[in-house]
Image (cartoon, rainbow, N blue to C red):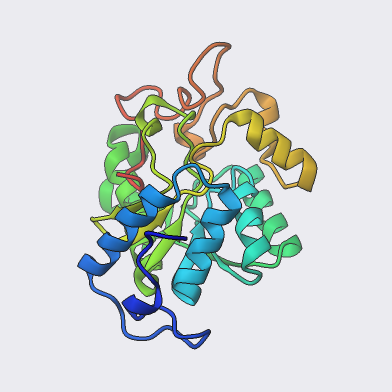
Length: 251
């Protein structure tokens, strides 16, 4: 694709050989900015293929296991791709069921990453129910820090963010530079609508969290997720008692 910085020129890929020397942040930023422009409007599968061909084994997929759409999509161009799941210790059983379905039925390698402390240990250190007193701190301990640990060996990661999910995600690019982590972030389905997701799920019989059939518009940790009402934003049920819209993974 014209205009894209070549992967070989960055030392990322060498004719199918293992990844060479790590590129620096400036190289990755340049790559992300050019790819973000050139891949805007491209099919999601093409965006995923670009990421796989560019970064090889230094690329992974992250999934909250609300559904397996992104995981399935990437697995079509990269069987065996590593999938990072943040096992917070506070997930609904239905979410863990999707994770187990994905691990058992799709050609991917699921990595369940846990926080440094169990929920009980966190309670002992910070007091019980930190999520109800300081959800930002709880998310930092149980999601943000584990993700940063999990991504240490990668140059790029994919997320299933979509622009139609909430106003805070309306400008999500298909490829961007994650400055906080110094990595390229790929959002292959950023331009998809819920209808696109539903069509993909139906066509490929992709696992979906059962909670969506029980009036949950978005699924996170059980203490901080409620059912949504008719007409509400799909993410209105997340941290409903706080002025909080994101967990901190995507800022």
